[in-house]
Image (cartoon, rainbow, N blue to C red; front, side, top):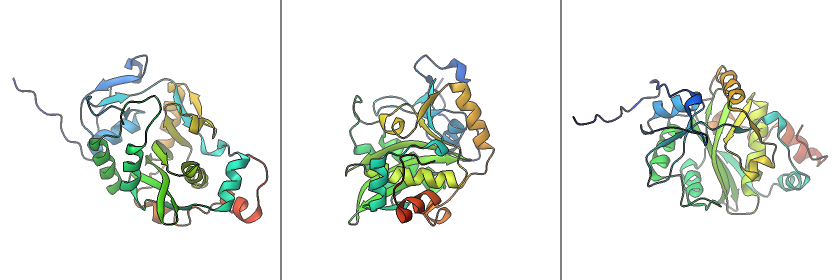
Length: 256
């Protein structure tokens, strides 16, 4: 009998993934399906995310522990505070999503072969951007895109997918004011999924999966800020902490 293709799920459709406890020791939960909007939204709402290479089927992950950054606990070094205060980079939101995700795809990753941001992943997250769930942060220098990041947002959670820099510290210079803006807007968690030195240096920490899932459940109780974030966060990068830094000077090394 010919196997039926996996159904394409719209944003209002829901797919129940296997329980987190069934994931392998390295976090693999299941394989297959597709990258339709309903599949991705269902995944993130259950703590699941896709991560696979171009020559592999879609692999869905739910690792233990999870690596997260709570916006209120963001740590900013004195060096980065001085860089941000100089305003070397112009920052924006949702101005160049396609350029950002393609730049992330082209950026080499130490210890990884090829890129996990496949053409199918690019198509999928561009659909999510068009639907108002996926967003980008851009850093510009003399009109050129030199750094940024992208991810997906649900409730008071932002799921960071990838970032890139073409100039030293450009992605950090974009990420830090972005997290300040998220904190001011009531966001409670930035999910980095797995550990990176970059996020760890900014206050990211591992949390047990059960604790992460509880954090996620609380975050999903908040309304989703859907749509164009250039409009929703029209004053970006300005926030209380950004103004205190850029208008009043550098004092200390903590964002709190």
